[in-house]
Structures are given as C-alpha cells and as structure tokens.
Amino acid sequence: MAKYIFVTGGVTSSLGKGLTSASIGLLLEAHGFRVAHQKMDPYINVDPGTMSPYQHGEVYVTDDGAETDLDLGHYERFTHAALTKHSNYTTGKIYQAVIQKERRGDYLGKTVQVIPHITDEIKAGIRRAAEGADVLICEIGGTVGDIEGLPFLEAIRQFALDVGREHTAFVHLTLLPYLRASGELKTKPSQHSVQKLREIGVQPDVLVCRTEMPMTEEIRQKLSLFCNVPTKAVIEERDVSVSIYEVPQMVCEQGLDRILLDRLGLSSAAPQLDEYHRLLERIRNPRGQVEVALVGKYIQLTDAYKSVYEAISHGGFAAQVKVRVRRVQAEDVRPDNVDELLSGVHGVVVPGGFGARGIEGKIEAIRWAREAGVPFFGLCLGMQCATIEVARHLAGLTGAHSTEFEADTPHPVIDLMTDQKGVEKGGTMRLGAFRCALRAGTRARASYGDETIHERHRHRYEFNNAYRERLEAAGLVIGGTNPERDLVEIVELRDHPWFVGVQFHPEFKSKPTTPHPLFREFVAAALRHQDAALPTTPGA
Image (tube, rainbow, N blue to C red; front, top):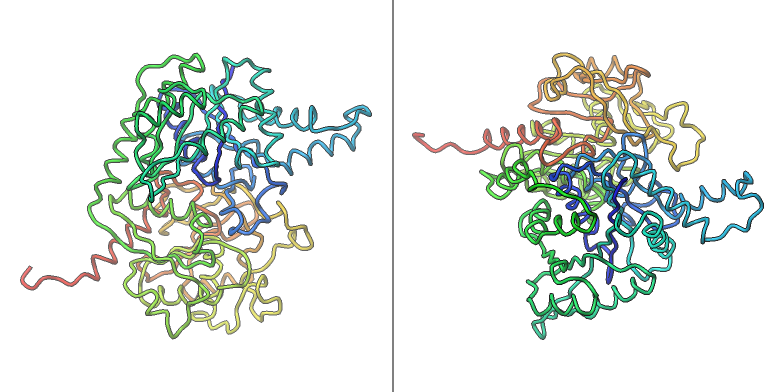
C-alpha cells in the first residue's frame, strides 16, 4: 500500500512548499523508494495555461501534454518521478469533473455538494497520482486560511481517515519573521497558522520553518509546545546562500527524512547521496564564470522563466562554472542601443512566450548575436524569431513575420497550423512530447548523440514549410523535424560558432545532475567565446 505525505503552508505564500516537497522526494528516492509528486492548486482556472506569467509564473508542461504549475518543474528536477496530468489538479479541474458527472446523471439524482462530492473527487485524484509509487508527496497550494483551499484541506483530513493515519504524514511549512528592530524571531504567526490547520482537523507531524536567521533551541521548544509537534520534528529551513539545491542537505542534516520514514513505518538504511554531494561540490566550487543575456518580455518576475534559468545553471554545473544571467527587457532593445545592452555577454538566450510585445527587440538581439558571432539559443518563440531574422536579413524576404503578430505579412515564414484555426485558447496547442528526427552533421545531432529525441512542446504556430528551400539557400540548416507531420523542430546556421533554435522547450527536461544536452553545449560555446575574447598576456 502506498504512503502519503501532505505538504501545507501557512502565514504567507511563496515560502517554498514546492522546493520542500521536491527535497523530501529527493531524500526518499535516496533511501530507495519510488516517489510520486502531486500539486493541488486552489485557483478556479482549469489549468494555468491561459494565465499571465506575471500571475502564476511559467506554465510547466508534462510529457502527456498537461499544462501545469511551475512547482512540477522542481519535482522533476530534484527526482526521477514521472509526472502526468494527474500530478496537478486545480479547483477548476475538480469542479469541471464533478459537473460533467452531474450532467451525465452519475449521481443518480442526488444533491451535489462540496462534501462528499468535491472532496471525493479530490481524493480520487490523489489515488490516481499515487499509482505505482511507494510514497506520494502531495503539496496543497495556497495558504491555510484561504477560503478556496478549504475543500482540499478537508479532503486530506478525510483521506487520512480513509487509508489510516499510519499511512499518512502531514508537513506544514511556515514562516518565522525576523524583526530587525528587536533582533528576534517571532513564533506567533506560526502558532496561529497551526491553530488554523488544527481547527480543520489536520495535526502536522512536522513543522518546517522558513527563516533568515538561525533558530534557537528555546524557539524550537516553544514551537513544539504550542504547535503540538515533537521538538525533533521542528525543522529549520534557512535561506540558502549559494543554490536551491542545498535545501535537501539542510533538511537531511536535521533528520527530516528519518522522521517521515518513522512516521510512515518505512525502514531503510542510510540514503545514497553520493551523486547529490558531487553536484553540491561542483556548485559550491566553480572554476570560473560566464555571462549570458536572456532577452525576454517577463524578466521582472524570475518565476516566469524558472525552468530556463535553472537549465542555464545546469549547463554551468556541467562545465563547473557559474553562469551569470543578464536580464534584458525585449521591449527596450533597438538597433541604436543593442550594442550597449548586450555588450560583453558571451551568449544570448531568447525564451518562449506569446503576444507581439517585445518581438522586434528579440529579433534585433538575435541579429546582433548572429552578426557578432556570439552563441545564440532560441526556445520556441525564440526559434521563430530567429527564423524571421534570417528571412529578413539573409534571405531578402522584406517584411517577413509570423501571422501571430502580423496577419497580412507578405512572407508568413511562421504560420498557424490548419488544425489550430478557430479553436479555443485553453489546452488546444501542440502540447507534450513529440518525436524529432535529427539530421546528421548538425550541432543538435552532435549535442544529443542520438538520431531521434522526444521533447515537450507548447505552441500554436509553426515554421512554414513553403519557405524551407528559400531559407535553406540563405544558410539556415534544418537540424531536426517531426517525422509524423514533417514539422521543423530545430534550425541552425552554418558558419556561426553556435546558433541553434528549437521549436520545443528543452528546459523542461533538464536536471542538475543531467543537464540538457543543448543547454550544456550552449554554455560550453559561451565559454569558448569568452576565452576567445579574453586579451592574451604579452609573451604568454
């Protein structure tokens, strides 16, 4: 029978429940257990696919095409858990399922209510996500006390009764604010948060405390007393100094994994963390650094490009260098200031996105990278912008554009797929993993070391094959295609140090211990560019 760990949060949002959940998953895998992850989001949207990145950060896509919460990215980067559409449920998705059943008459004329019908649907989702796993780690989004989160908290309370309390563990993440005026950490918000949770009927087994200052033993005992949690189960989760990948080590040193294993009646020898410790050694002791620019439209919010930033860092881990990312607002890039904005960087990344805002700035940044011989990596929309840039400036296709941004462009080198015309926006794009055949002799083929790959997509517009020959004649190399539909997946440039654009999102498949091949090679190319640009010492 599977075991279940439920992670809740209190006091404030964005404390790091996702990282805490992922860290627990990493440690349990190190003990030899098969782990599954799940995120329950209380918002009413069916999924985050139609939400602005400023509202909810990036949209993370699974192999089976689910548009999900960005915390699923943490789960996949930290663990080997295979995530699916059952790994992320929202209030909207739960209610949609219940209403569909009601319309079909599945409830046999009963009055449909939050309890038991909504909570039963939530519990069914939990069971689906746990299939094939030894332990499911289920994170409840939002903050205890939020009205929209009540059905989920009620559902996990019921779930513990259904499967037996010995098969469940509750972890509550809370905040210990530090008052600089008095120089002390305050426990009262955490006490109130746990009190609110206990009113619902959930007693946490572990209290994880986010803090910027060390906890004293006195504070630990006070929290234990007032929150009804054993002293050893009050875990300090302090702000990390170097990398988020230090979090598992921090909580492991305080015995979090052992506490949870004991609570769930699971036995295991010492965790196998050798690979993880080697990773931390590389992160903490870089042999140098390199700077790359990310030219995007959502640079004000780190979470909007969370997986991209992480994948760039992973490329640095492989080379044992620290990668500094210069965030450049695409709307600010113009021909008269592009040199100033990008001067000194050793690589340029243009990520995915939607909408016309900042497109010309992205195209200008790509032109700069091409002409300056600076390594360039385009992701999804970044690949489409690279195609437009080559069409305009190398193929002589004046006014070339994407019909997403200019419906009457004379040269629609990027166009809407026929089966995408007239559809609703939510969940209707080319989503999930698709096959890509790599062309021999290309950088992509050399990077992957394989003939066929599978990568995750999230887009509606495609490379227009009507322009393939003209663009190839101008120097564009088609590095990979989807065999089933003959869709262009990868473009490259001949006679350039490293210029690659991909229609998919490789950042979703990158892990710190196994960096994505294209990010690994992009950072390596940026390092070569940096070395070539460094002045040599006379006589050296």
